[in-house]
Image (cartoon, rainbow, N blue to C red; front, top):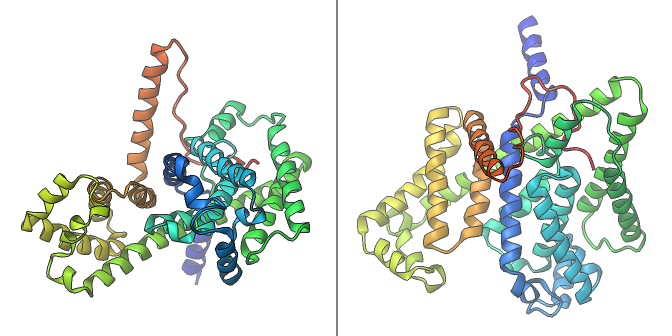
Length: 398
């Protein structure tokens, strides 16, 4: 009985004492914000046709569908072109600021609002990568993804535990509160209750976090809020991992049932479609090799089905992880699906080993130091997660 109690206590302590996977969550943040930002910038000349009020999927059709499925989109609050441009610009800015980790908690919420608003406005404009981005944008709100590799982490490191007057955070909180109040009172939330409730919950939580951090003298309330933040972060990270495993396992098992995947020719057919042939010569070269087609077909199925079962074997998992990322990179080039591939690679990043990510951060810091030293500026040291983290509000400031 004592051994069982100790095991349970150790498990509870592991979940509550720290926000695990700081490097993995930071890379997921960077990957998805970069994917969405690049997509928005590429489609900037075509934004009206994709999501605008005068596009093929007009506002009347969008309202009919949203009235049925209860999806959230801020673009339904107004049919004006100015409002559309404002929402699109907000999505671009939120993606860029989340990418660099500036006020990650607020930017993660705005990032989610931008993703949901545009994607739910025109649901037939996306692909599998958009579905993954849709889900991950919601999960990121619950993570403390600014612990490392972010401007938030740099600001916290410079403060070194000292209380610094923060005017930007309260200003963002006040503006967002006014906007939420106006939208709620005006009855503009024509969606299910989940997203509006999440927005209000995050807004209230930010106020409580600030009040406890600034007004209470005792450390217990701050520790309690930090424990809650760690639990939410760790739970969200677990959900992201489970989502990735579910994507690969279901895709693999469905492929097994297809006759073309069984006879080893499934990869051949997409290479013959003009829509998936940005480089026709390269596609033709691959399609003419029966051996490559067979290896790609069977290899895809084996990797997708086997990956969830290899998570408890680090070496095998890392090998399959490299294989999957390489496969997505090939898909991006050969089939012309860069944003789908980037979204899947960003999802796979949650499984990357911490030792590799620390080395990656060191390489990046050294490269940045070389660039800055050439410009005559002082390089900024690499941001690393503490070995024994104390209660911290990094990544949770407005």
